[in-house]
Length: 226
Image 1: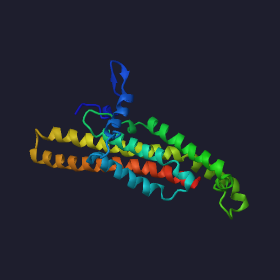
Image 2: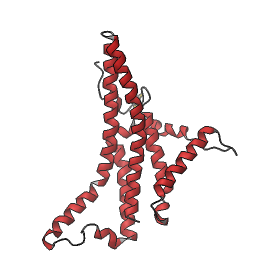
Image 3: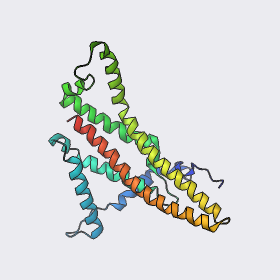
Image 4: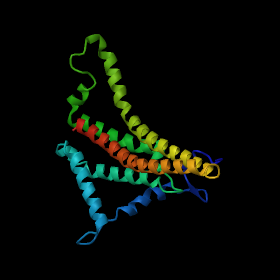
């Protein structure tokens, strides 16, 4: 119970060298490139899931937006795999770090905004001033719309960080309580263990849902700018 509550969020080091890069690259092993004429069941399921996700996510885009399909599919695979990586014992969750999530959100958001100003300049500028706005409110609305635009990448990063961090902290607390209660009351310890198992299943779903939500919001920003 004396273990640091935030120990699982500290960047792991080996002989003083951060190994976060190796951890981030580890999920690549889970998605191998098949060189066989007929794929096995695991690869076939992966390809089917990616195909269905890509079809659902890119159906709203025009030709320019569909050129981002590879980027968006890579993004959802990366976030989902790193989220799931944090559910393994003695592992590290890179997406629990706000800095990393910002490093993903800011460039992708900026790319969608630049694309909008490049291809749909008038429409992009029109978002800063809704039609029919009273003249005295024009400066205020322009400032509000600018702030709402600039806050989008921060909202993306904070949403992902908060959901992953909250789930891991709750699992840590319930797990510690289960260990402490085993020597006090076995019945209560069993109940908390069942809650922990259910919470782990929920976190598995949250890891996948948050990856989908993050990518979907980037896709919607792209749709508004193409």
